[in-house]
Image (cartoon, rainbow, N blue to C red):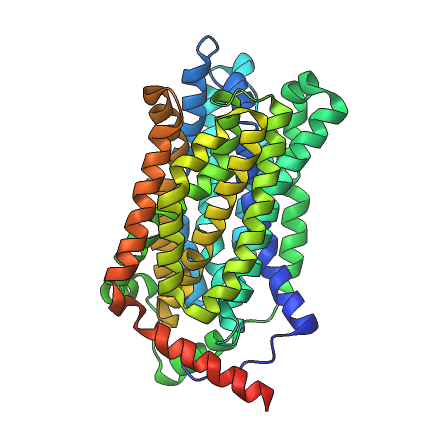
Amino acid sequence: MDTQRPEFTGARRRKILLAAAAGNFAEWYDWGVYGVVATIIAAQFFEPGNPTAALLNTFAVFALGYIARPIGGIIFGRIGDKFGRKRALSMTILLTCGGTAAMGLLPTYDSVGLLAPGLLLVCRLAQSMGAGGEYASAIGFVYEHSSTHDRAKNVSRLIATTFVGIMAGSVLARLTSAVIGQDAFESYGWRFLFLLGLPLAAIGFYLRARADETPEFEQLKAERAKAKEVARPLSDALRSSWKLMLVFAVLTASYALISTTITSYLTTFLKETTKLTADQAYTATIVSNVAVIVATLVAGSFCDRIGLRKMFMIGGGVVAVVAVPTLVLASNGFVGGLLGSVGIGICKGLLAVPALVALSQLFPIAVRITAGALAYNVVQAVFGGTGPAIGITLNELTDGPNGFALYLAALAAITAVTAFAARSTFANDTDAIQARVTDQHSDRK
């Protein structure tokens, strides 16, 4: 589609990125908080007596929440592809943040018994449904505002802000526990972290209401009106893009797993396997997220230069080789935990950029949000939502980090091999790179 985009620089770029990042920050802030307080949730929302079973139940609720993500992807994907990216973004942030804030008000198992985990699940389902439409809409929003020579770079900036949200959860958990004490934090202080969803919703909705719709969607809307065409994003996506959705799912399974490794499992891994204190585990998680942010920004620039397919091959290959030694290192004391956390953070950044750029680049604009959101959220549900529970189970069986590490390495190898084999899926990579070279040459004249 040939569109003339307004220049994506300066104040306009900040406005677009802030609007897109607001909801992503809130979404991943919730994921980060849930991970760092998982052991507290296990103690307060499930029957006492078996800490391992309670922790598994906590992550089972986490996994069940992912069931709502494909549903959210379908609902908000349809809104984004039929009525506009901006409208979808404004709606997802309210549902996402509402589910987060409600968790801060829930009664515990001691107060209401089995109703407590039931209400916890309802909150996770609401949050997950909003998140199901959030990422694809926000990435598509930035992708479509960007020129061909800096799309991956701009998307990587958006991705980096989501990891800031994850890190913010760890930072605030550490600060709150330090200020009020660990006992008070485990008793009631953790609730403050979730209640921050309310101001995050207000700020994000305001920023998104002031943003412009993407030029590509505006042209698509005009073409539909001229042809008197009724948009049917879901049926069109399933009919015309199902093969792309399948390839995308296989390519991004490793990212789905590693995203929850950092977001909601690493802190638990460091506490349970490495035997770090809560403060040490929070510190290592924060350091890991800094590594993710740096790796993401670097990988974004490389992806624009070498193309999406090569970035998938490099990211998958590196993670396949280093996943096992990195998690083994992370299981050896505080220093090992820090170094291993940095390594796993770099791995996540290398996989995040191609996985999330592909969320927009692989799919046609008319079904971009629906096809991307549905495929992304199905693979997140299958591999991401189950990641923490599988990690705990595999490490219990192997009495160490090797089981989960081998699982991650195998999925990363599949990513690299699939990217190598599915050449036709990336047929537009060569054209896109050539277009970027042409754009850059024109800019220099």
